[in-house]
Length: 472
Image 1 (cartoon, rainbow, N blue to C red):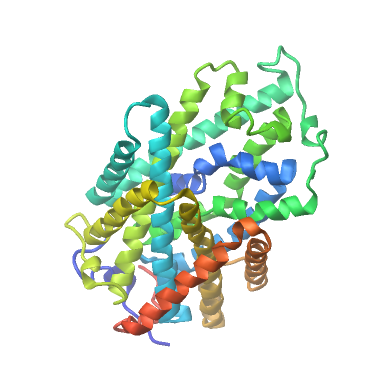
Image 2: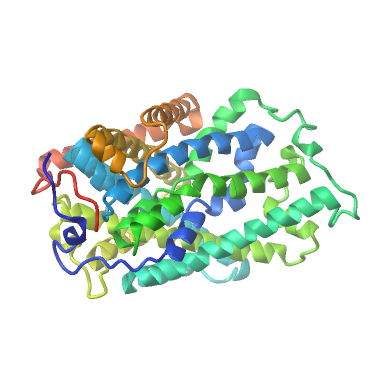
């Protein structure tokens, strides 16, 4: 098999190198905060409406699939920690077209997601400052997060660390306070509430298996972003240590942040009343006697949206940088600043987001919903590529090389095939339910467009990358 450049030197192909300035605490907190977005604080009500208390099952099932996907990504990232991550692995093990489609698909996926998050910042700042036009807050959010990313990767890491910490502390406080209400009657005149609400309003699964299945695509979209940890491998100080630690905690944080929070909320409030009186987080804090609960949650939602935007700009910049290195994007995007930041790649992403913010105010809401459906489909495409690349990667190793792997996939290849089958099920469910079917028109059409561009402009890598040796 051909062997490509050593990753430590591959980053210096054009311009200065990316700098390994993301420490253990940065990556650990990024891993904790990556899948905690605005959706958990405000979007959970819609998923609860579909599945009732059984929504916890949906998050556990989806969480197990994500755990397998992240383990597959971790095996490759520890063996070969490079910028571009799964796009590069798709190229190395599945071919140049797969790498091209995965990279550009992920770039666009995060642009769409960032536009939604910037808009969320504008909406929630409007609660405090109703007289200020929304576009000003949207522009301020984009400008501030863009500047953070352009300074240095360490600045990005610091902001993401504190953003993630705010979200985590809020959820832990809500879970602990909720347990106080359930077990000790805090805020309820000392009368313990118990957990009977989990089954007393139509049962634990009030809408049957159909409700749980309907919620799966929404649940999986909530996990979008967790794969970002793979993109940090090219700038982590010690990827062999930090990446496995971050990935290893995925399932436990899913249990705590999603299942734990939902268990508390669904125990305190009847599932069929959630969403009718605002955010369940606000309701829980107010019950504990915190009068400023709405303001606190508003602040946390804004930081969650800024965090997602910050991470999205980071992801799009690194993905474009990797594509340019491979000759699948203009060479100028492979150049870095003196601080080791892929400035040109970031500037293109920020410029595209400016158009996205403008489009968000000009196009009808339904069109915007259709565009965001690409993100749902794009997330599943990314996860499928990770699993397929890992299957090919492992199959290409000798027995001795497999034993020498520092971080291994569990129950390979059975776990990979089960996770792939689950993702196929989610796509099938998206096709079955009318509300989500549009994603299966737009997503594949976008991939066909990218394929046409690939062959029209002959965007195969200029030199074969092959399988890369592990970083020293």
